[in-house]
Image 1 (tube, rainbow, N blue to C red):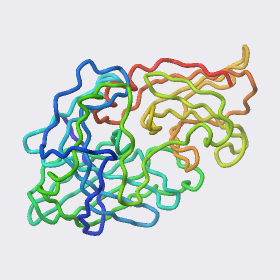
Image 2 (tube, helix red, strand yellow):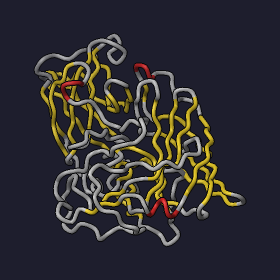
Image 3 (cartoon, rainbow, N blue to C red):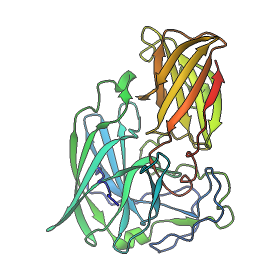
Length: 354
């Protein structure tokens, strides 16, 4: 497997511990995952277990903020390959010491940057490693970047983080930001003992249920990736639909940066329960007005501080009774932690009457 290299680092040699996930009640000092849930549904489900994290620090440059964490190594699933729905399960290797995670966000708007290129280089004495991290989705952390990594034992590590921009159109207060490559450097302490003291919860009674664990409770002011609920979405919400266990919200915006001189159609796919956005999809849409096709084409991945991560397109106008047919050309290519790997795969064409 070609394992890409992550980007993230955080800065100010802090080794403060995160409280981890809300509701944790069982601590275990193990570095491997329990058995997989049997008869997993083709939907979001409660995983076999969930972990807290140890904080590696934070870094800042301009409006860009980063935070670095580590926890137990764990299995996850990559997307892609021969077909859009092909998955590759990444098992824990014998030399994996930690699952290293990073979050990136805009300090001004509090918007998490969910898709981009991040590279992390760790150095300790005469040892170093570089990794391009995967964009990932987990129930307790939402969208982040991460990978399992082997380290050089306890001690202080220097982390050099390179962020190469956001792979989506940026609008509103985000327009013109984060287009250039940014490099940040920090140090952090890694400790096997601190990692083994991280909270670890198993879900023997609930595992496999169609549900999800809520976002973690943080000891620092770091935003969690989420999209607006229906009542708070900008513009006019025209309808909702569901496919592949993903909820789709469809709205039209007739004024402001999104609309420009026309009418903007926003399609906002999100996870059930936690309303996390689903990036790295390929969506197209057809706007039908009676016998006339008013629009037929691809929707553009867009990150807006008010609408969140979504897919959209400006059109000449929308009339009551128009039908918008949404086609998922490719499901979310974001890597998945346990509980998300069986969802968002078989996604059928859906039509919403506007």
